[in-house]
Image (cartoon, rainbow, N blue to C red):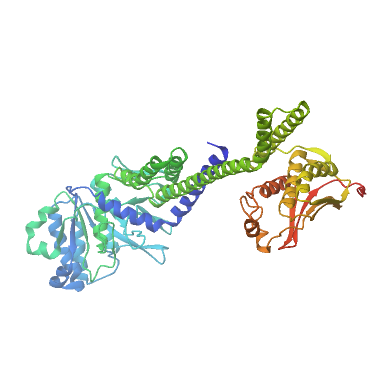
Length: 609
């Protein structure tokens, strides 16, 4: 792989990874949606739960006296629960206000009989202090836990295991219930986790001890106060289980949230706390991948997407890219099934950006190579046309001369003349081939120009001597007006070819008995070498196209003059590689003037003899 191509793929990799990180930072809603989708897809099968709900539903409120009689029927129900000896009882109601003294007394008596009682507290005054249960109720509790969850986008996916208000910390209701159900006296803390009764809970302090709730595949079993009153035998279901008591009635429950498994429906807060307890009891925790691990996954997918096109082409590259995209979508889910939550949007973005970017780069590279190949093919075809056109004259002379020598008995002097002609035309043909090859190598960037100094007068004298026989056949006079004593730097043979081509074109496209004028004068540090004829001329719109290969003007085609339109394109390449330019003025029926403007060292101008 070339360095330039490798640098291009590395740039695609860096850009893909950077954009994916930015997209992941901005794509939290997409990550949350993907998390909910994976949660529903990977929900575990039914399992025996260790908790049960004693709920206050709409029917219980309607039949047992409503909110006005709430503490009275709660006391009655809790008396029956206490008789079943549950492991712990969690009351998800803030018992902070005084009520009817008789009801408060009955509730206090019922709470005194409950083992492992956990009461609720709430943060008030914008989180500056805790609102605790009444002292008469609080003294009956083995622990007081907070009721706060932290939903994102209205969906409760996790809850903080600890909250701080003022200088007082409170553990979550579910965590306190789990501690009491395991008979643990304390919760042991470390920077990375908590430990309760020998169970390690991954909840780093840097993440506010957040725990993702592993919602059960089936709703937690629920018995209402009304059902328990009508059927006291249901109290046996509470034996050796953790009982969560709370409001589920839609008309009275203030803490209802959507969850990954509830869809558009909401779930009561007490049921969310029960699911958090089941997460702790089951020990099947969902742990967020570290930022380094998430970035490493994105980088690996981006590298794989780039490598698919950097080292493969065709269907193999596209097949490899499809595999990378498939992995980008499947790896987060596969890790989720193993309890590790990776972000979804960043890895998928890295894979798509790298695949699209590397694929586009490969497409551009292949197209560029195709254009280069086509250009080389066209150049080769042009070369063949040039060889056919430019070499016809010397080959004809050599062929005719050799036939004369073989068919006729010529004198020694005539044979010597023909041999000299064959020799000169052969050398001319060799120079022509070398000139052509040099121009082609220049066009392809495979050759450096010679850096030799030569007088412009020598170039003109040589070209006029070669062109004069052609001009005499048409009775055209070659007129050398003035020649500056200037020195050119470059390749003399190529420059002679350029000037000679202009002279032969001037003779070819001029009527008989006209004049072709040649001049060379300096302007500052440039030489202006002009060839002016009195020929057929050109239209103004054709002047922009005459240096294109194979282009011929309409007047030239109508006149029947033989030509291929290659010579001027070669002249332009020669002049351009010498750091110059060509200026053309022409008008139909008034002739043309081609001027080569070249860098030169000016000397003293002298008039020709």
